[in-house]
Amino acid sequence: MFQAKVESFVDKHENVETARTIKGKIDWEAWVYGPGLAPIKQDFTTPLLLESQAMAEAYIVGAGTTGPADFRDYLDNKKFYSNLRVIFQQYLVQNEERVTKEIMKKID
Image: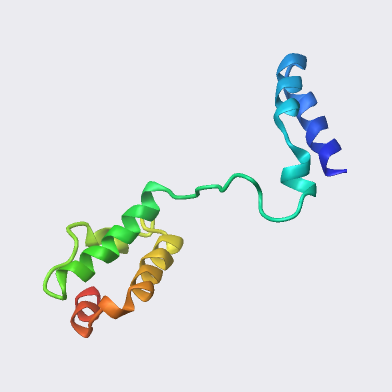
């Protein structure tokens, strides 16, 4: 049923030749019906995710004496939205053996 819906969508939104090409590239057995994870690992890394992790790393490297130059971005709700804050905090938790009380005071 899923396969039919996807193929119908492709047929509706693409010309005949493009639709045939797209549908011919889909390995339904591997992606949908086969066991295990999808055959291609997706990478959802974004520049903002990396920036958030880099900000946390800069605090760790600063050892409580310095912070990142862009630390004010964390306070900007439009640029540094809640998911990026979670990534920042997760990075600190994942590196807790490197995080000191002085670093936490600097972040605060």
